[in-house]
Length: 251
Ligand code: PEP
Image 1 (cartoon, rainbow, N blue to C red):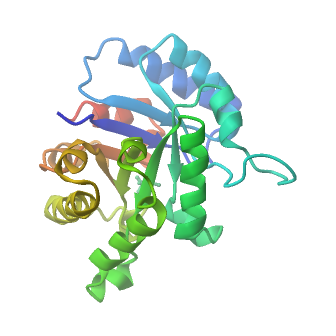
Image 2: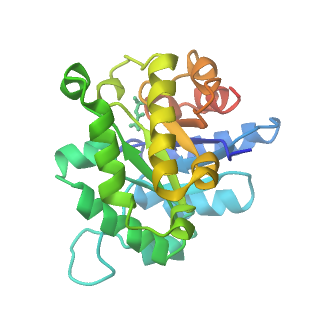
């Protein structure tokens, strides 16, 4: 069976005290729950070390929201994969649509980020997904395939086993408009086929593919019940412990 994951992308929210309160609440509420998935918290970079300290005593993993494409050096403001590794970060989101849009990250730059994470044994959560106009033009499958090929298909099969995919239709992120379970399943099955064509059946069947985009406590169960949906990457609904844990309990 594939690893099921629910990951919370906090984006640029919470001050230090609020972050500690939320991490503490999630850690303590997780104690009474027998979750069927791995839980990953992705707070802003400033709070990663604190999150790792809590994770040492709890049952969740820590993820970063971004990493530099460079190893080290004169890149003011950047955080390297080695730095993430040094505070025990387990996962890192790469290719979120907000980074593609506001920071002009393209598929080839994202491939470099994936390489840096592999060098430091951090699992990549690679985001892909089309904007509304691309879906309306019926080119959403081509767009997603291209994103995956250009950022990931230079990897060996062994390296690819360190990748988690997250299908996040851009029109569903932060909008309250969720993909229907059928739309999510259709794209997830397509992504699995693209992986199969490159790396074979075993790799395709063992790759975790998350759905992201206005997933919440009310709709998670139906989305996660789809055959090829292995969990979620959660934005807004990850900022409240109760909602987030309801989602993590939706398998
Ligand atoms: C995200 O930012 O990855 C996301 C899925 O956001 P939201 O859940 O708020 O749509």
